[in-house]
Length: 162
Image (cartoon, rainbow, N blue to C red; front, top):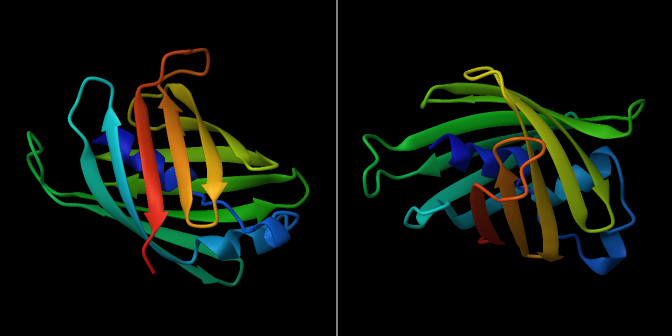
């Protein structure tokens, strides 16, 4: 279920065309709301999750809730916080889940594509991801187990539901 956590790390939806020029902390405001996601690890059946975002004082908080499905032993719960580092022109994320995994991540935004790098405390391995903001209400996420991987380990699509 660690891969579902990737959704939380990089769950950024497309901004409307007029807002795409926003950068920094103002771009995070778009996340606020609830998203319904379907994703799957390579070779696994699809899983569903709900991500809820709230924003306060420039910090975007997310909570993932994935009900127990298929071979899962328990529901998957995760939370993270994202903030903008203006000096480094990047977004910083930290979080934890009940699988258990803790992580730290950075990502940058260029046009409608986010590129992320992460480190998992649980295994110490760096990974990467790419999120494409397809529209104002949908994004697609692709996660890779290592920085050099060319074969995705996880793919998801999320749609804004409220």
